[in-house]
Amino acid sequence: MRKEEIVKNRTSLADKRWVFAIGLAGLIAGAILISSFIKTANYSLLCSRLNSRSQAVNDYSAEPVQLQAILHYATSRIVPQQNIGEISVTFDVLKKRSPCNFLVFGLGYDSLMWTSLNPHGNTIFLEEDPKWVQTVLKDAPSLHAHAVRYRTHLQQADALLSHYRSEPSCFPSEAYLRGNEKCKLALTGFPDEFYDTEWDMIMIDAPRGYFAEAPGRMAAIFSAAVMARNRKGSGVTHVFLHDVNRRVEKVFAEEFLCRKYLVKSIGRLWHFEIPSAANMTSHDGARFC
Image (tube, rainbow, N blue to C red):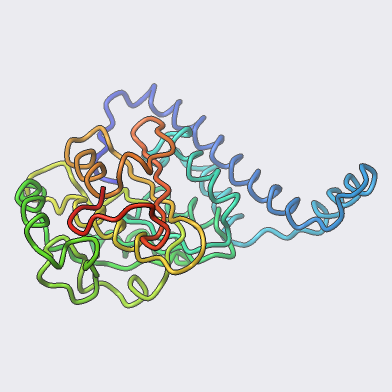
């Protein structure tokens, strides 16, 4: 999410990033206006609609984190790894679901943006590098982030797939996360908030997955699928997976998040809408898809 980008052409990239940063600040400002319009009470007549919207713009007070985000992105040449098209996929869902419970794997240059787009909701970030958590929180102390440890390594990806297919505690009908030491793909030892919250949206843009000893995103993808299937509330769980151009992300997405639940693909981002197991039309005790 933060360390995978290497600047190659500094002059041209700086110009592009400046334009992107301004556009991102505009996106957040637009979100503030949209939220104000949503709060307008009377839309019955055109005249009252215009008056109501005008009053909403005058009366609406942006949240501090939103103003901080606008200032940050408008004055910074450091921008999120995702491009504007990929960001817009998640933004479109946030416009409908916020305030909501939003879980983000990774902490980086986009974290302040995601928090500002869900101002009255619960947005938390899970990061593998404790030092990076401290660095980010120095500049953005309002972010809600946890340092976590993963049990997997990218080089184990194929072996973990074989393990899941033979370990009953990994089967979708039996899978759980907290304390599930038998299933090597289950995320264990995470903060209680991770397990106790029913997540409406899950963004998987970490942990690192570009060298053999990196944790890889295998467990994050598996665990997102388990949480989505175990959902008790109404509606689906929205799962966003970045870097699907890489083999492991793509293979694990097709194994656990399922092609049939893929609703949008933009750039390197896939968006899934996963129903709870209770609302699935068919069940397979040994496979997710």
